[in-house]
Amino acid sequence: MIYDESDKLLEKESEEKAADVEDLLNLRPRALSEYVGQEKPVETLRIAIEAALKREESLEHILLNGPPGLGKTTLAHIIANEMHTKIVTSSGPALEKGGDLMGLLTNLEKGDIFFIDEIHRIPKIVEEFLYPAMEDFAVDFIFDRGVHARTHRYRLERFTLIGATTRAGLLSSPLRERFGIVRDLDFYQEQDLVRIVKRSALILKVPMHEEGAYEIARRSRGTPRVANRLLKRVRDYAEVRAKGVITAPVAIEALALEGIDECGLSELDRKLLKTIIFNYKGGPAGIEALAATLQLETDVLLEVVEPYLLKMGFLIRTSQGRKTSEKAHDHLRVPYRAARHERTGLFGDKK
Image (tube, rainbow, N blue to C red):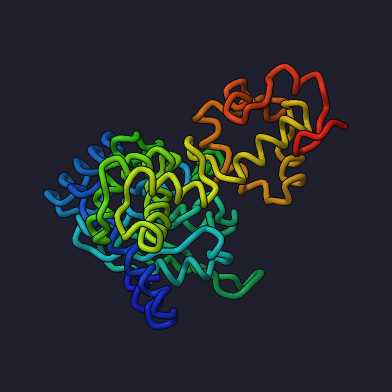
């Protein structure tokens, strides 16, 4: 998939959906100078890009690790722009067979960026095709079977593989060791999120007070993608209920309507915490049991819900399972000790 995907989306979607896609692409920075936050990883990439351009070489393979929405895909597109080359994108689940990967690799041109999102979900048989491609820039084709089997080594143009993952621990050692640059992206600070929200509001031409930007930023779970999504919802609310201007009270009212509290917790976050508190006496509770109780996939809890709750100190992960902290009880206004001595229902009713 080449980086002209937006054109196809705009043709297929309705005008309203197309506008949302266009907004998203417009909000995404296109150069490292426009990128906010992640100072150390960005500085590392800036040096690597400048050095590669001076030597007129391709970049080393890059692995970006971090929770969803922190800018891994955005950084991949920025790197392609900074290197003045094109980007071909795919994802781990989409590469089901070796042939899927072969078709993409053999069409790469010199210096191209090959971006694989959720690279930890690549099947093992496909992953093995990546080893010679990353190390020797070659792939081996096998013809016939059995005693008549023959192999042919096809030389590839030198390219840069950028892998994005939310769970680096699931990558095999042989794959992880073939990346020359490995960087972890962390949750954003509030001041950086305020800058992102103000920049996005300027692009969307939404009048907004400084306090309004702060209220959106502090509820954005430390994640730029969430910040931009909440900004759009607050924009809609402001246009209908507040003459189009985003002030602090307007932002608070709009986000309360979305179920987002002052710490950025959603309905799902609170439901997970309450399940542990009321159904499992505050824990420990196994992730599979929690997923079954909430009727969710374990990956949703592990990759989307848990990271922020762990960072905020609301959730404690132990070898026995997940436990809620005293901070979580205070936030939900549930007595900390009482929950551990008295089994109650999900909504506080005693059992």
